[in-house]
Amino acid sequence: MSLHAPHSAAAERYRMLRHVVESLRKNTNLQVLAVTSPGAGDGKTTTSINLAGALAQSTAERVLLADVDLRRPSVARQLGLDGSRGSLVNALVKPGLALEDIVEQLPEFNLSVLQAGEATDTTYELLKSPRLDELVDEARRHYDYIVLDTPPFVPVPDGRLITKSADGVLVVVAANRTPRGALAEAVSLIDPAKIVGFVFNSDDSPTNASYYYGGGYGKSARPPLWRHLWRSS
Ligand SMILES: Nc1ncnc2c1ncn2[C@@H]1O[C@H](COP(=O)(O)OP(=O)(O)OP(=O)(O)O)[C@@H](O)[C@H]1O
Ligand SMILES: [Mg+2]
Image: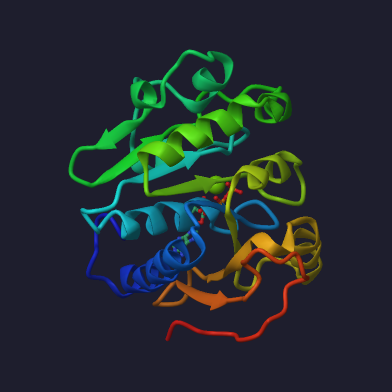
């Protein structure tokens, strides 16, 4: 909706989220943001695409959306892209491959997309290699914002590796779906200093997503302290 219906109420919500991310960029240098959630199907990819789309509405900023869910990649499918440009998996296994050779620029939008590629059964080993950090560093040099769509945090270990390369983590919580225990477990596994906030995703509400700010992002490693809870409406 941020891409195809930028005037909708839902797109407005994602613009609020964009505003928060832009402020964090300015005040704390946040550049690489991982979008995760406790379980499958909570709305990580939907949030990643819409947040990246909202950030990309500013033509002055260079925005990269990277699908780092190598187990169940869906950014390319949700955006209707074919796999012709190459993928993150290609770049992880081929050290010489430059990001600019595999990133796809969406023609009508100011948005670059890195597809995940063929899912393999060695995703953890692929993500554990120092090559992931190298690619993220390369992305830092070419883009103002890098949004990483990640796998569910609790059931698979990939998210723990990916969030190490990120400056901040956004946790998606599906209304009426994400179990409280799974959310608590995910939060306990993420570096508290990296949690920038929570997105309450609901596909049955007319406004679809709300954002709550938790003051966990910053240099200190203290546990998240919900200094203020802010709702975007
Ligand atoms: N706010 C929303 N409004 C409408 N549909 C939504 C919304 N959020 C999610 N969905 C739908 O729910 C399904 C799961 O969403 P999505 O793919 O974003 O979740 P995910 O957390 O990325 O899943 P996975 O764990 O499999 O990667 C998709 O079909 C998506 O279109
Ligand atoms: Mg997904």
